Length: 147
Image (cartoon, rainbow, N blue to C red; front, side, top):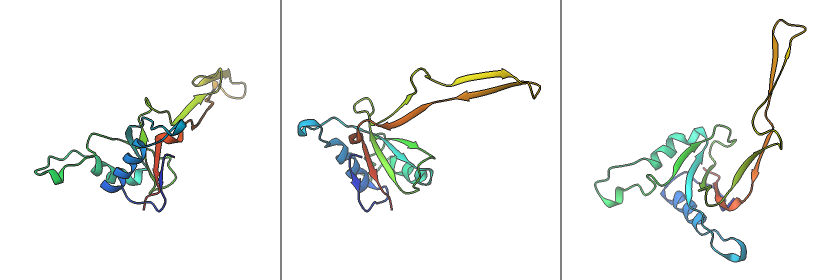
């Protein structure tokens, strides 16, 4: 991951600012700054409402009430995340590829097989989908353990 807050913290102006700064100041080969524009706030379902509040558009009456994250990040809710408190900010995948998934060679997409039933009246059908996922470049992801 690009950077991780060791103790973790809830989503707030300070923690989202730290995530954005960490991604924008990532270094690549030869210690050169790379382009990693924060694009998504990735949360488990338990943090969905909190995340929506921090990304909401607010018609502020004064500058101090402006939400700096309104419209700058897209919310992604992933029910398979194992932690109810950990959240991530990911870079724009068109700039830096982080997580990638791929199909097994020769099996791009679902493979459907069927046969006439001998023991049952009907047709037996099975669908096989072989794919894997992994990180190509960790610098496009920022993790916060949450509180």
